[in-house]
Length: 81
Image (cartoon, rainbow, N blue to C red; front, side, top):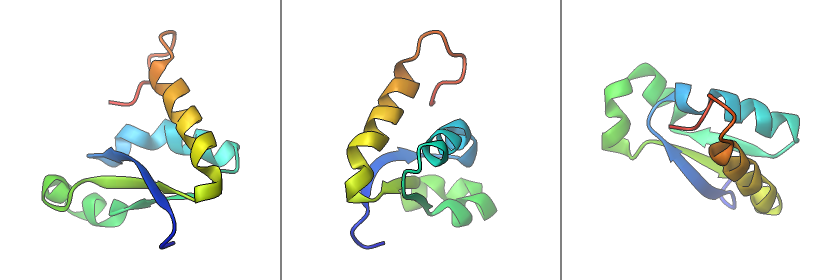
């Protein structure tokens, strides 16, 4: 897990729920750092820097592509905040 690369930061778990499903569908190796702490204490999000999406270096480009396509899809009402 030490070699995983941070590619995005979120404040709350609901902001990446759909993205998480898309990454799992594409078999991207990832995890959300600080997810449990912020789930238990949501107001700590700013204090600890948010929830970090970290991906395996081999999957980084694919994950960034999924993130970009999802964020820029103007036909979707499910955008990353």
